[in-house]
Image 1 (tube, rainbow, N blue to C red):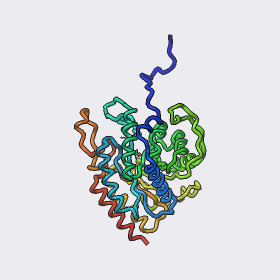
Image 2 (image 1 turned 90 degrees about the vertical axis):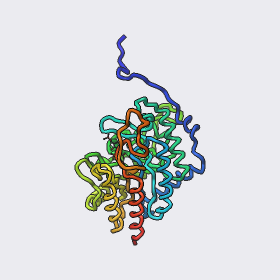
Image 3 (image 1 turned 135 degrees about the vertical axis):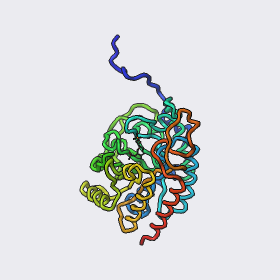
Amino acid sequence: MIKTNNLNVSAITPIIAPAELRQVFPLSAKDRDFVSRSRGQIKDILQRNDRRLMVVVGPCSIHDTEAAKEYARRLADLSRRVSDQLLLVMRVYFEKPRTTIGWKGLINDPDMNHTHLISKGLGIARGLLGWITALEVPVANEMLDPITPEYVADMISWGAIGARTTESQTHREMASGLSFPVGFKNGTDGNLQIAMDAMKAAQHPHSFLGINREGRTSIIQTTGNPDVHIVLRGGSRKSNYHAEDIRLVEECLEKNQLFPTIMVDCSHGNSNKDYQRQALVLDDIVQQVVDGNNSISGVMLESFLSAGNQKIPTDTSQLKYGVSITDACIDWETTERILLDAHAKLKERR
Ligand SMILES: O=C[C@H](O)[C@H](O)COP(=O)(O)O
Ligand SMILES: C=C(OP(=O)(O)O)C(=O)O
């Protein structure tokens, strides 16, 4: 018999439902309260009712929960020292969008060996999110797969839609229903308009296909997400964080009738993919804020325990502890120093 479907599919494996995973890793009333308060603080910063800068900081991707916990503990300590000027939110990214192919993150392949044990990945991710939340560190996540929010979104305080997916209708629809603020990156080529269009689309209600808590295919009807904003990440040819770029983006937001609130990603196109340049970008941004800019509400840094990055070895026991396996990161000592420096400069503001 001639087959006409699933010709390029080798297996379909049903997995645990979101409701079941939530039973295994519940979110306590105290932790729900913390997530809700963190989201409220982020909204206040984005709406410029709170003059602090939000700092989304942490590894490019999570691959080792012990290193992630150590990072979270250090961030919790630093957070207490800078909280009058900076709201630190940890990058806890489990899903990586790839330019072509590569490891797609802890949820997709937790053992980093092409076995793709996605149920295990979801469990590790939810367990770690719960642990970091209990430590009272707010969490930021890239929202890449439209199925995963049902499994983890109750623990997230801020979400990113990446440069490769800002133009995607699926991601705009997903953002319209998320319960927390969402930042849309400009395109990898520097295109701003796709982020403007994305914000307008995500503020609107949508009806689309997704899954419910029981994992059943469902029509998801959203009311629209009012807390969306742009994230400037630079482009393949040019950065977009200098004062003249920020003015241009402010004008563009006004023309598109969008609220003037901007996050700057110090990494990616803005650092020309040289992780050490993130310090210079942060310094420039802080100076703009000190000089009176009021639209810059957040920054993003790719930072881990140790500097640089490493390839995933065939024998994963050979991985260096605390070093990124995706984009290169600044180390903890640099992170602490530049954030304390930013804190000191912002304190001097009138
Ligand atoms: O932030 C991470 C990377 O820049 C992004 O996932 C793309 O990575 P790639 O170009 O190595 O695939
Ligand atoms: C993939 C990322 O960034 P971008 O979408 O800007 O490339 C990221 O922040 O991990």
